[in-house]
Length: 493
Image: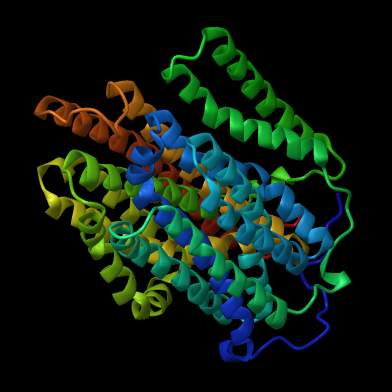
């Protein structure tokens, strides 16, 4: 397959300063803010939703997981679509659908309905999110401006991630949970306006016309869904034949997807790109951070509100260490990255996120001080890892593949997020008798529940640590390769 050059000519001079593109940056920041608000607000509302709708443990897990499954399964497809038909066009369509899906939550009266709405939001988000990083990266030519632009956008999202649990906890004290999910609709509207006004239509020269690999997209989606659904079926007591049948379908889907992408003339995802050290290391760091963040958010919510009996408002106050670190560390990100370099910043920040998860898993049951420390460590790492990991991935790809590259980054994060939620939910369902949102919380049941939280936390900590180790190894290979070659860009793309 022949890919276009990374040095495609631009129709107009790129902005020389961030302020020259402030409308576009505001719109792109609002897109990321929507994603972070939506996820964190839902997490803080999960116990309330479970009680209000009478959701089982497995169903409550899929209120969160349905979004991630749809998002992760379809993001590569829509990234490929955006590289062909226009990143701005696909993003605006997705934002309109996101706003509509947010409004639909007002009419939800049952858990299955909420799961369907969340899946619909995942489809719309898959159309929207890849364009955020791709458009920001392409707005500016100088490397330092690209990093600063991604930092601005990630800051908006991480601040939303930090303040949403606090605000959400207080709102739940005076209003129904539907109000929280509806509140994201105005953010989607603001993002739509900013992108519509501030981002120019994609030039034909910056896109490509390769046919879309629909077969690869279907196989990839089947793979993601199968990997995430299979363990839930075994734990929740579904008949053996459907469970093992899905295992077979998943294994066949994985094999068929790899074969398809290695042999197709125009694959949905050129697997050689993932093999590039710069790309694979960034994806590993991003996946580790996504897994740790999702697992910690889910576990902290359950620990504070169910095991310790805190109200939503008090649990919101309990997340303030995360808010403080995210807000206070903003001015330190740039100097830190400049001082240690992108490579070291990536693995150090990813390691901090994993360390925070490990602290929670091993020590949280002994008091809130350990929960606070875990939140602080994860917040410090997340402040950096998203920017540097994403930048490294996009640096390793051709310009006309930036959307699929951004989709790779977000797919790694979302699949890891879904794995984190699925793994914790599955372990809790297996170890805790009955629904975790109902029943009498005796001392023995609390002990059992906290033991289950520890096991779940240690499990995802081990997986996240393995991903960080992989990222370090691949990054080291990048350094060795650059030291022994005079061609810094991949020669086959």
